[in-house]
Image 1 (cartoon, one colour):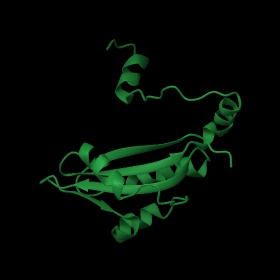
Image 2 (cartoon, rainbow, N blue to C red):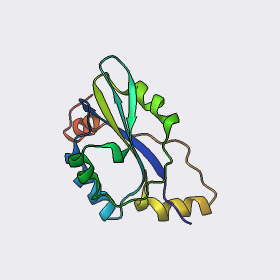
Image 3 (cartoon, one colour):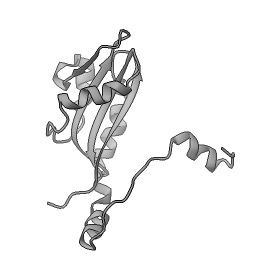
Length: 140
């Protein structure tokens, strides 16, 4: 099977729940073939610093209904071993949505790189505010 690069992102929300209004935008990425969801995990930290995780099936009905629009394979690649790693970064009183996805858009390029004997040396993301400043011509 040819696969694109796989990565995970953790998006944090204030409060004890994920804001389901982000799900339609994620569903657009899936529907357009940009990404393929491999797994999802929700990690919360209460104000006392206690970290917990929630399975999608344990969500309230309204939030679960929002996630039902996502087409993907929940392969259970994220597990209990990942909860403390993510939980360490979640601020007290917040909740993180962790999404493991395949970057389908990059499959052909990744295949060509592997066939040529290339490997990824490094990878980083530029924060949105830095990009916005650069695009606006504002020095950092």
